[in-house]
Length: 244
Image (cartoon, rainbow, N blue to C red; front, side):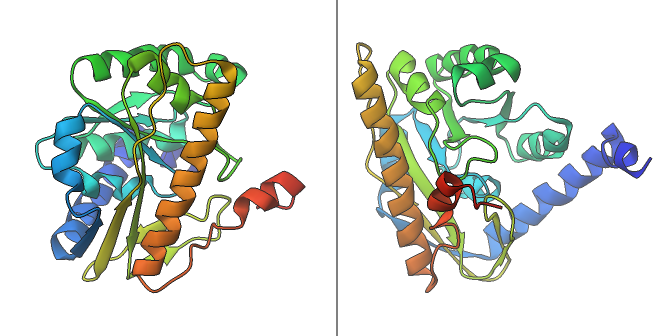
C-alpha cells in the first residue's frame, strides 16, 4: 500500500514541487566556479549539443546551462522516475522518457522511441542531457549516447556538477545532491564528435572518449571542491562484480 501511495500521481507531484523548489534554492544561494570559464558562451555557439553525465549527477546538471537555452533530458520510463520528470518540467527542462544503453535495453525500455524523440529535439535546436552509463552498471558508458551523436551530428560534452556542501549517498551510482549556501563547481570536458559514417571501431573509440571525459570532469570538479570523487572506483567494482 505504501509503495502505491508513493507512486501515486499526487505524491509524485508533491515530490516534484519540493524537488524543483529545493534545486532553485541551491542555485540561488550557491557561488559557481565554471571550467572552462566561457562554457556557457560556447554552449550557445555549439547548440544544440549533447550533455553527458554519470548517473547520480543528473539533479544539478541544469545549473550548467545558459539562461534561456532550450534543453531536454532523457529520463527513465519507470514509475520511480516520474517525480524527476515532473521536477525537470518545473525547471523548464523538457523530459523525454526512455532508456539508452545497448540495443536490447533500448528495445525493452522504449529507447528506440526515445532516440527518435531526442533526434527531433536536436533537429529543432533543443540541446539534450543524458546519463552515459546505464542503470546498475556504474561509470561504464553505454553505446546510446554515441549513437545519438552519430545520427544527429551534434557534439557530446562530458559534464560534472559538484557542490562543496552536499549529501553523498552510498548508492550503486554514488549519487550526490548539492546543499544550499555553498560553492559549486561546473566542469565541462572537450567535445566529442562522431562522424555520420563512423565504423564500429570509431564508435567504440568515441564511447571510451566519453567515459574518459566524464572521469576527468568529475575528478576535477571534486578536486575544486577539496574532495575526491566517491564514484572513482566504481567501474573496477562493476567489472569484478563487487559493486553495490
